[in-house]
Amino acid sequence: MRIVIELEEPSVRRCEWATLSKSPLMIQYHDKEWGVPVHDDMVLFEFLTLEGAQAGLTWQTALNKRENYRRALHDFDPAKIARYKNRDIKRLLGDPGIIRNRLKIEATITNAKQFLTARKEFGSFDKYVWQFVGGRPIKHKFASLGQIPPITRESDSMSKELRERGFRFVGPTICYAFMQAVGMVNDHTTKCFRYGTIWRKTQIVRPFQKTGSVARSTPENL
Ligand SMILES: [Zn+2]
Image 1: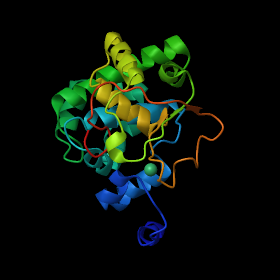
Image 2: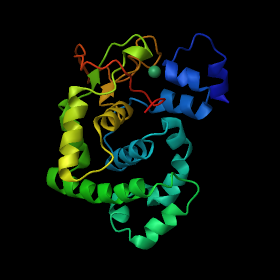
Image 3: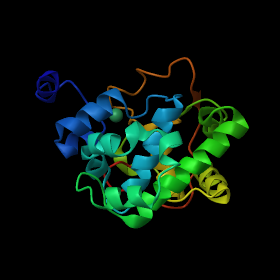
Image 4: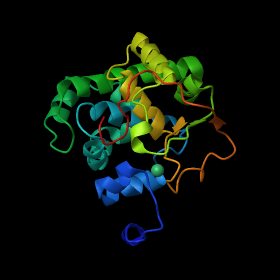
């Protein structure tokens, strides 16, 4: 109910992708989660999985299926998923609640194994993945959706590293969407009420270096 009230309140300004979605779930996700720094390994794996699952689709598709994924994937527990066998792949391929794509399902299992390897090596996946932004969120200053890049130097590095480790469905665009989601970068637009309300103490402010592309990266078009 609170969300409905906010939707009707003209003084609440949000990132365009959230407003345009007209989806209470998307708006709640934008208002409560998107861009908030995540340091919990299980949650990081959840986002890595969902961002990979939505490749070629929309973030809203993946978000709508999130609870089904939690149920189907043992609450995104990588230790359990890493042990999945052929019968689990068959079960997942038959589950209409999730995105039934064999490559994506197999990638989830592969990624769970690589996740555990990285966690063992670095002490936590959190420590491993946050190194790509130097351990602290990067704060951008984009005024509108069209200014948000699809990839950055940091997401390129992350993608390259993860691929070398054997992760799949971790292209630079997916990695950048992941970075935005888990708060490694603050891409709320400057007019959004969430811009500046979080990360005050920790983020680095620096100008964005263009990569040459004019496409954008948001949950709407990834
Ligand atoms: Zn926003």
